[in-house]
Amino acid sequence: MSSLDADTVLYSILALVIIENALEIYISLRQVKVYRNALKVPGELTSHMSEETFHKARKYGLDQENFGIFKALLMDVLLLCLELYLGLIALIWKTSEDIVNRLQWDASNEILVSCVFVLISNLLSTFKSLPFKIYKIFVLEELHGFNKQTAGFFAWDQVKSFLVTQVVMLPITAAIIFIVQRGGDNFFIWLWVFTGVISLVLLTIYPIFIAPLFDKYTPLEEGPLRKSIEDLAASLKFPLTKLYVVEGSKRSSHSNAYFYGLWNSKRIVLFDTLLLNKGKADDSELTDDEKGKGCTNEEVLAVLGHELGHWKLGHVTKNIIIMEVHLLLMFLVFGYLFKYAPFYEALGFQPGTRPILVGLLIVFTYVMAPYNAIINFAMTLLSRRFEYQADEFAHSLGFEDQLGRALIKLNLDNLGFPVYDWLYSTWNHSHPTLLQRLARLKELGETKKQQ
Image (cartoon, rainbow, N blue to C red; front, side, top):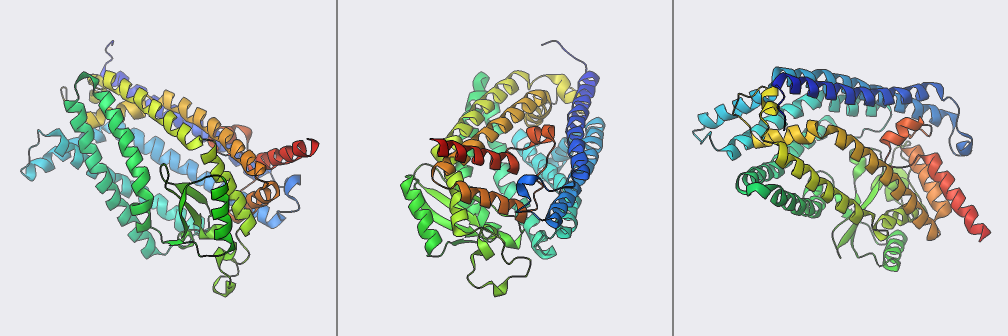
């Protein structure tokens, strides 16, 4: 590899950061223009969406986008570039070495120093992001009626999140350093195998042991909905073992549903906000704003028919395979580049100091940034294709009308704005827009009638 001086590397990284964020901000500004100029309910939704709800959604979307642009400018451009230019990463590493020395540990042990480095970095990152989290939840979400968190709930949530993150990250960090140090010339293969195994382990243990630390999960009570879901799963040979309702309403009014689990042990989770009146037979406990929100049992089944379509069509498996191939390529490039001295000197390290963890950060975040942008865009396009296929699967189960109604209800309940700039939607949305999905369902229905 031809050698570049440290300044050239640094200014190249800074230019990359600025260009990447400038593109994102430009695309966001296109959508801001749409929020300001789209003042009429689309014809397809006039019988479902009132003018009042439309303008509430427009204002919500505009506030979210403006907040995102402000955060990107401050955090991802100004602050990040300043940190890179001043050598903050090298300073944190030096501080980590000093702490290890003060604790009378071995400062030449890179695993120990790396773990302290991760702890300090995560602490700084948490404090930097905290004002934005507070504003988003207690100002933006509160203003538009979605926030359900109290200050105490939020504070305890942040503490738990930080502690759990450290418990998970520190052993993984130690293992990564150990593998790179001891894995020989082909360490990247062992690193790839390790991360693959860890990913599967985390996919398994997160919903069982970690998620319940943050939200309350209860089995869906016996009744028509549970029986219908179990019958649907059985008809598709979906290995359903557990069926939960998560009390997401304590956190937010937004709704969702998902499944998880490996091989022959799958669990389905429904947000209580997805269910009509939170699944309560007696709505006297609900506020006026909560009454009537959510989907009927038939509409919930349609949503699950879509989700189970992802499983039946192998979308989860395909995504895992793509992710593993992507990781192998990333580790291969890391193995080739991580000893390149100017990368470290550009970030303020003294000649000869090349921490493995910092090398991983540089290669994955900056060197591979153009590749990552292309891959992320390609995965967004693939995801949209998968969503259409899952909608078609739900349609084949006879849920055309129910899925359409559910999509509209979820969009209304979540104040989703139905009009998007084409470039913004193509670049950012992993799902087709509401109007695109409704049009596709209508097309499928017409095709079915003609057959």
